Length: 325
Image (cartoon, rainbow, N blue to C red; front, side):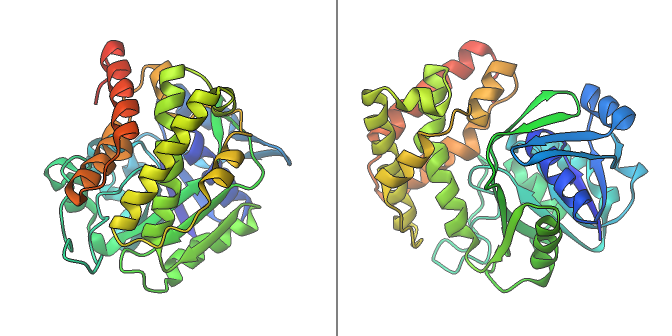
């Protein structure tokens, strides 16, 4: 199976290494020092179970790689317009594109089946740029659970051992193409599965992003350290309950125990990606991770005062750093 990972940051690099280990013909779109390091020395992923060292083909220009069976798009939401302009050479007639990123995706209301069917999300995909470049027919949703960090160009450290990718079609049909990607990842030692309820899976991940990301960013601390403060722990729990309420108002079958979920999160000494972006001076995914869920909550009449407050603090941090996107 010929698979290109578009965006070789922490998540993209980890997935590329697992896919290569699982037997796929893997290539990577990368840039800068990361591209140079992968071209020179390959890609190294340091996991709790040992090191994975692979040598995928890497390029800055998709034209060097040509059409693929599948593309995993792992850029930040803020980089989607650039990805839309560059991805064309990777797309053959049957190429699928799996969007592996945090937050609410541009396709969330396509084939969704409610009165909101087909609603566009301009906060996430301004001007329908990514929709027009790729199309809903190619699209697979992806939910990644993996706490990982680029520690130097071409080298990624993975903090957890239960990493997994969940894939699903926007219309929730059983998907052979999603299952094929999952099978390769499993062969590479990573948890993976196809689902027929991708929106619920997306929201389950988003709940954690909303409960931990804003508070950790405001505190400039990892999840474990942040949640050791009892006041911040209560605030995180309130954020989680508000996020659950918004998801349920959307008709999603959200069944979690917030206290138990918080206990698991609080054991992880990992900085959320939104905080990593702030510290690195990169554009922050505020629109898809925070603004869009809040907007949906307001439209549905779901109060979310603690989320409103914590997200406002993140927005101020981004403005102060000059990286508000």
